Length: 545
Image (tube, rainbow, N blue to C red; front, side, top):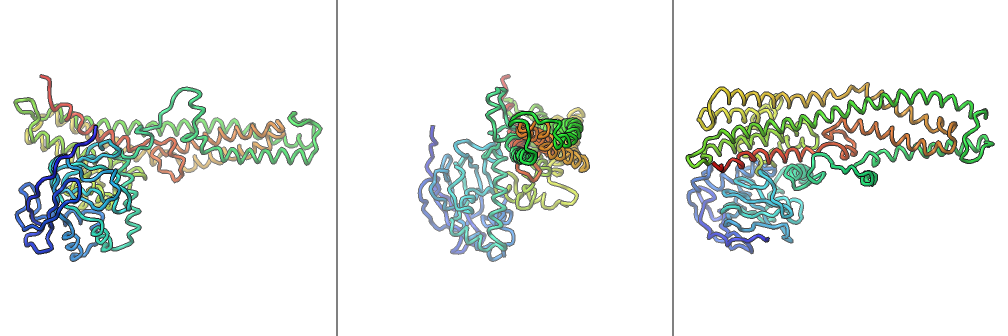
């Protein structure tokens, strides 16, 4: 079923600045097609706006964005006056992924827009654009087609900036534009994964499998074979060279494919190395299997911890949903909804900031540029951003502040009697919050103490020594059959060692590329938690009794 779009609103006159000039913003009639533009005079801002004028609002948006840092005062004024006031009615299409060209960005001043990708609406908060959100800038920055479809969920008021004015804005910024684009691309990719626009394993935390033997044998991508085959091939070629060299050197009396004669002078000397290799195999097998078991235990522990954190955040939101104030009809009161929405927002931020502090794949979100981008996307409010900016980064991280926000907002709701203000409720809140904090702190400890360097170093040398001796040791015992034997042994022993090292990096923080095959997709866990933040509130919106 296709989207239907309402006709655009008749524009109303609103100000850009308290003292208008001929260069003040124009008003656009929003909707599909090319809007008509007309000049307007200054009036008071809408009553629901916390800003004294449109210009003040735009300056706030620009300065908190990734494109406002370092702008001179006069340049900021020029950028503000390049925007054009626009209004869209409920159901109007702002732009679509099907658009051949992208010729403007849009800043939401009031109302809400729905954001979808490939026909699927993104989950909250990524799928809802509200006041301060910047929409459509991605296509302008990278000169591509639209990557999202945006439709007005309510009547929407905001400001458009065309492509030429946007690039004039970028030219006013200090520094290299290519560096800015590169960093923004990385942050946008992270936000796309966290929002669900891009998935790693099709939406699964870890890659799924089928128990079928045929299905498993047919796998290549994402398996250890994909990474161990190069080492196996190299050792197999070494074994081939040893076999060929031996036969050329001693001119053996046994036929091709027969077992070597142990009485041959050279073979009898090589058998000594075979005995050493056998002793080494016993030690290597035991050490490697134990090492793999320890690595898997860490991987499993981190996965379980991730689920515990997710569960405690869900518990806090469930406590609110079942105890929040209701009116006589059984529906949540306005202040109860505000409380639950605030706590849900704080839990979402806590969760993404927590994992960003541990995962190299997400850590850019903790940077100033990452936080500003989250403001642009409506994930972080401007007030929350300003509060985080005031923190001493050397002692307090964003996730720490968010946990305090969760508890303080909950307690404020208790004081206001939005939820029961009793000892049991307060004790449960503190228990859940302290368990959450303890679990969070434990992740860092587990990752930091996963294994001493000396242990991993010893295992690496042991396995490599065992595999390096294999071509000569097996040639003297198996002859030409030593070639496939070396390849198979190298594949399994080297593969087990690689698997162990990958499992020791459950969040994919190693510098190698092969971690993609095993580590968990944190973006899925974050998306699940985002959905859970409002699940209980939505589920309790109406009661059957």
